[in-house]
Length: 315
Image (cartoon, rainbow, N blue to C red; front, side, top):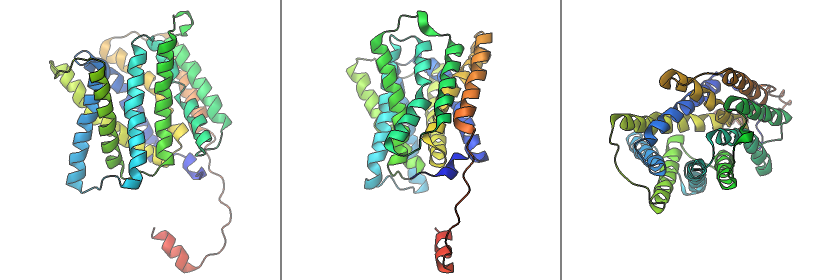
């Protein structure tokens, strides 16, 4: 069940992880711009349905098979949790919850993911993961400012916790259930999650309309192509080769990228607290995701027949 060798990230894994963090941070800016012209749940649903359509075209052109009946359960659960529930909960939370509190709650995703992975039996408990996640949350508190003086609505807090748990559980689903080709998995999952979001949008009475400005169109296209297809293709690539709890550290690194881009593109001020918080977060990620990741020495295997070695090598 446990693959200790997968704890050591190679250059491809680290490159994919870094790209995920950059795209995820850029998505914050794109979503803000998109929300100026589209209702939030409607915009999120449109984003994922649009990405699913493009992915389906890609599957047909490349003759990639859709998920099998055995793979469909995990794929739909991934879509319901990762694209439907997490985005819906986050939207409902941000109606009343301060963004600083929301950032701290989402910063707990590595801890939640580690605990869920242990509970589901897909990972062993790691003290470094617990310590690293705690340090990362402290860094986010420094980055956004401790929200102790803010009036925190209980309902909004519970919704945001729902978003964090949904995002965490979606990673575990992909470890626990069989899935097919990454592009096929994302196509079906995004379509399912997008339809759920559009349904919630219709029930909540959001106004549906096409983007009216070029800024909204460009933001939506970015979110469809790179912010959805690119990001979640990298997510599946990394998750297949690394543990779910380590991959989840993207949630605490993206606020750093978002703050840097906010300063570069929107003229937002940079403060000493943001710098200190960023350094603390990076240290937490190092402790929880990168340090102590040496794989144990393999045990001496019994001598096998040449035919068995050849069969295994051809798998």
